[in-house]
Amino acid sequence: MREVALRIKTDLERLAPTMISMFVEVIPEFRHDDEVRRLMVASTDSNLAAILDMLTLDIGLDDITVPPAAAEYARRFAQHGLSLEALLRAYRLGENMFVQWTMTQLAELNPPTDVALAAAARIAFLVNSYIDQVIEGLIDIYASERRRWDARTDAARAAQVRAVLDADDLDVSSAEQMLSTSLRGWHQFAMLWTPPGTREPGAVLRAGTALLAAATGKTPMTVEADDHSRWVWISSVSRPALDTEELVRALRAQPNLCLALGDPASGLEGFRRTFRDAQRARTVALATGRRGLTGYREVALSALFTDRVPEVQAWASRVLGGLMAEDDTAARLRETVRAFLDARGSYTDAAARLHVHKNTVHYRVRKAEELLGHPLTERRLDIEVALLACAQLGLPRS
Image (cartoon, rainbow, N blue to C red; front, top):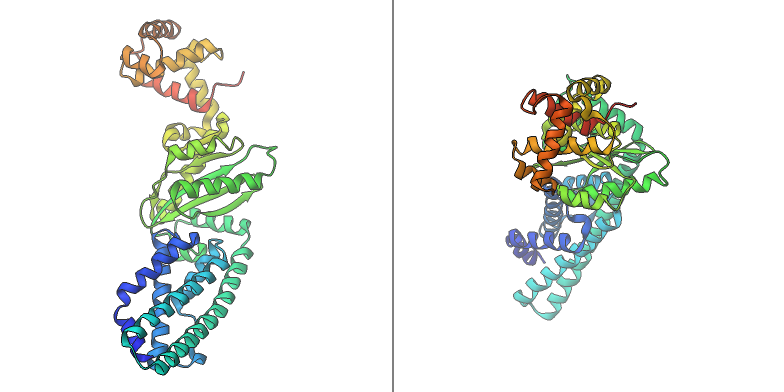
């Protein structure tokens, strides 16, 4: 039995990754981001090391405890709302794979039949007893962490997030302890909400969280701000890569779901900045009645004005004059002027962007200049900013 364990220990650098790959392939809950994956690897390695020490050093079952890395991994499982059943299944699958390794080594050693049978039976008994004992401890750890995590009500969690956001003198370690999560990597915040009157808003918000998880490939953390809104953030070691196009497509199937997205940022200051970015993007979306996805990057300039919308709209009215009318004709003229200016004054490029004939762009630009009372080349920057404000903050209410 000792010889079998020593042989496995010698080959552990090759065998352990095989077991980890099996977990990831068979159990969806084990497909973590890099940070949690490292913890999963450490948990697996520590359990294998403990079992091999038990077999080679004659450690008694009474002395077996849950390895620290395995305990922390179980706590992280609970924090992310992953099922205890998935965690326990991994232990049983790992037990089976380990016993198969020992049978292979026994066959290579080729001892007398009675010795092989006795060794196989003893190994199976000890490994099974180890797994049973560790699982008992893991169940307690998982349940305790789940109760602790759930006991931190969403209101309390929101207050803790706000404390981290607002306390400039709070260091990284204290902030991490307050939120029970690492703040040293990258973060990206999203604000999810549903319009008043939405049926079953909780289900809509959960669907939105699932969409973000699918678009980033990460397990998000969430806070219920109220019955109709949720804060969601993705944390990872590397910069989050969000498939925006896929997210926009998926949101079309959720007409009652609105999502404001901050830019990715790193560290504690990045955690604060991406939250505020998402918050500003949400303010723009609410001011204009936008649905679907509102990314901070696309509304960043308008977001600077969200606390002074009436003043900005009044200024835009002075700049644009008759172009600020609420009718469809004025709307088309504003759209054409924006496209024309974005195309650096090219009628051909503007026509291609608008899917109209070049002569149509000529006509609309001329009409816009008549309403402005001067060429577009005059006060060009003012015109562009005013048009952007109209598009993203809306027209003044009549």
